[in-house]
Length: 200
Image (cartoon, rainbow, N blue to C red; front, side, top):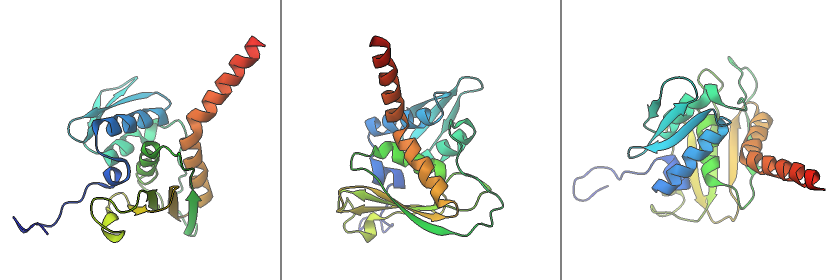
């Protein structure tokens, strides 16, 4: 509670708590979002917290938040997300432990994309991010959930991030997450291998 005006303390959006709010952070999130489309859409920061979309064909668009950006990019993704609707598969919990050097900006973009799909079974995410207590004190105040995107961020003392998936099709979402986080690394190694074989 703010002592000056009596209003509730304003907490940052989940992606800010997870991955930061500087222009450099948003540029990296924009680049990760564009990468998820295979380069079919150019994404750049726009305004105080939004993004500008420039598709190869079609009009330029603006999105005021990362959630809105994810919704706008669903039809342009190079790897389709799991979908099943109406879905009658049972809910499950699946913990995905990620490497210590995981790109947190890519993780934030994937989380927004994975929970943006309309008309599918709800997926909720608990993202455990290294770093211990953040600007709001201990673990409970450092979690933030929005009913819109079904994401909760928890700061932990762990050295590696992890994601708890709740919903159907856990193995498919896990595979999609790992592919999203490692796509460029795999492509870089493949390209390097081709180049090396040409030289030999």
